[in-house]
Image (cartoon, rainbow, N blue to C red; front, side):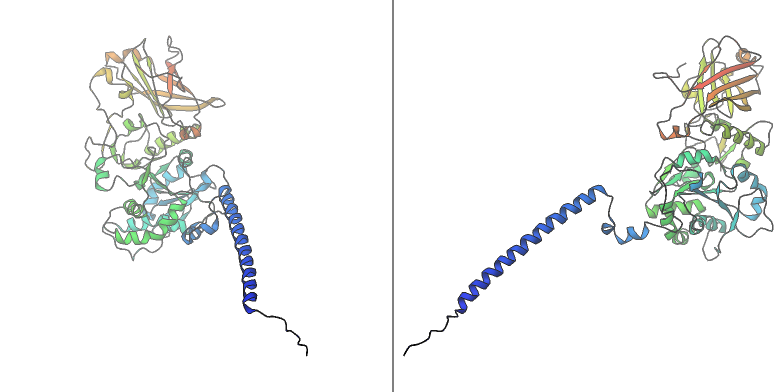
Length: 486
């Protein structure tokens, strides 16, 4: 009887075969995953090389703070101009009556942006004045000296919260601050407004800096805060006002906040707090090589020009500034070796003839025509000064701006009229025939301050003659290798 054999089913062999297939599949999957990983890594590396930090690498804080209310998301790359600046000016209903003319000198309707922040709503408001806003209630805050210090400190916060579009800088000042806005724009244009900047200057009087802070921008001279810094400041300002209620001024409270944020003061020498008494002539006649940005405390110093009111003096200076903003107050010095004269011109303000040869260091050092703010002392100041000497050879004949105009495209002429000639000094007799000085100069480019600025040189146009009592001077860029050596 025959037997039929059943097919063999060896489970061990089936397991071996299945295991081999699984291993092959696993190897294929691993190789594929490795290949995809390599390709992805290369793609990410190339992407990050050609683009700035991608959004998926940003932290939650960076994403949250990258856009703020009022910031223009479609911002162009145009240079900073006056439309990118918003002013917050601290004032009051009572003070505005006597100080409105200061702001009206520099404010340009429909061009300048910002507000005068008042303590209460005025009964009426001049059409010639900048627009105003009334500060929020600040009565909940403690203070040790003046409630206005709290209110004015919060102006930057309230201005920020307005959410105005296309703002790069917030500029704070007082209602007796005079800004030279073209130069302010030139200064701020040097800095990247996407970063956190706190720009301003100290007091001129050391006693004021010691009492308050060397790391503080004094508010009367004005200071500027970039948009990103204002956004950070807005988050913590009220807390700072609470914590630093014993601090005297609003600017001191702001500076304390900046310390907490970790941003130091960027000093610009053209902001003038003018914590001085007496006559500012010595400072302005030897202005530093920096654009004139602001003046303050005009009511506490002598008029800038003789035989004029304070207001008329400022109008005279602003008139020159409109012709050549960057050149205003810039000092140039030169010598007439034939007559033994030293000549100094502070463009748009004053000129001097010394009947002897003085060093460039002496001529560029301010003469002490002023005193300290608090004690009326002769110093110290945050810059060097030289005393007014009785030596006739170091007493100049002084000329003040009388006329400003344009000769040709890009060239200006300013005329300076003699004032207070000391006819009794024998040393000055040779200069007495000079009753006027005519100064020719090319307008300074506003971008000059973005480079490495250098004091410009000057020369006498015709050293042999003084035509009809007028000495002609030309201001120009210094030649390569040229120095001002007596």
